[in-house]
Image 1 (cartoon, each protein chain N blue to C red):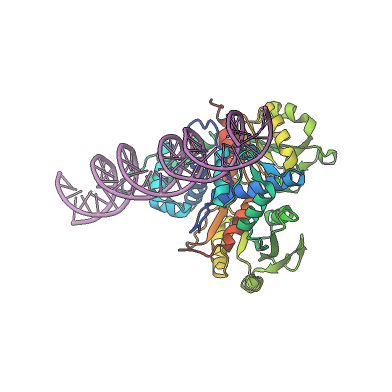
Image 2: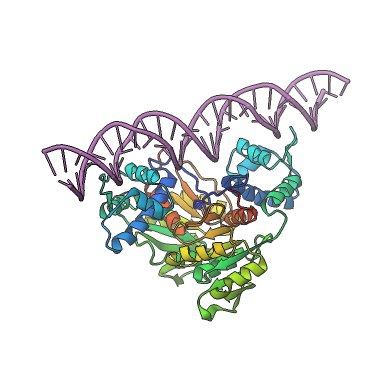
Length: 219
Length: 219
DNA sequence: AGCTATCTGTGAATTGATTCACAGTGTGAA
DNA sequence: TTCACACTGTGAATCAATTCACAGATAGCT
């Protein structure tokens, strides 16, 4: 869990869980399309997504897709629809804050994965890291955050700073116009209504996994 | 969210979300105890956890804690109670599978964080990585997985292999006795009932964050 | 010793997400 | 051209999680 687990916001229309599943569907559909398939049934997509046919149909309904009986859904059409909703067909710029081990791993991970989302700037207080370019992303001094975020029109940020700094950094980023956080710090953030936070709390996740490792599988 | 979002299992008693919050409470409580505080009210803990007093009280009730009116809860007692539930006061051994960039970052991240959970073995198919020791964790050839998991009594694993290998690796680990997965691969795993999977799907998480970055804060 | 304000513990209500179940429909077969 | 089947689309039911709301308790004050 990432799931953690995310916090919702004044979610305009589509709930977080649905958005998450749409992201997964898109990945699966791109694979299927690449392997030449054109049509798919809800039960097939459900099997791939480890979900249920009803869930898949409802999700697709939510984004205004429709299939046809006996034929299922047109894969290209679905991808198109998900693209419209998810990345709004625009490339999203994201900033990384905190260029420690974890921050660098995050940059490395996302490089060449989702072309529609790009890390265009990183920030750190450590002067030694400033001006370096990591996976094509330039590191700036934290002092320049407001400038650069505004200049680049960045509205999303990944937070990879130490836990005790997370809240104050988040406050500052909110003032600088960030609307959406990917929070890797193992604390919950206080943010104003309308700001989205997705917690990737690896600490909590490991505790959960450890807990269930001890449960002797009932059922 | 990471949550992703986790999948439940034949959860014996306590739901995943509750376990996640207990982990968070424990961290907060340890901090508070370190700063000399002895008692706390549900509304204070709720503020720290960005939750509600009712939620906190219900969670604490779930693990059999009780406070007293006007005094609140005894912090030491709460920590004790959470420890009993969460790590069962035993150290949990965890394996890492996949020693790429992400795998190494995971090891680095968890080193010296949760003493009650320890990465005792890592596995990779790349012969060059075998026998190295990374953050105190030895890397073994994938071929030795069954042996070592059994020998060390490991029941939990973090999966950091490429997406297309994840399912087959998971199948194999289930046969080798793994009961609980921390899955970093951006796919959902098919596992038998009674096996727990916590998805840390960074791909999905970034898509979610990008989505909400575009939503003009309603409310 | 009694009183009061403020907290806990929890049954019940609510909210939100998922699943059911089935009417409607387009497709491919004959 | 017609038929029957296997699908979709969706209102309603269910299920799980969270929140409300209040009765009961107790610490501290007088």
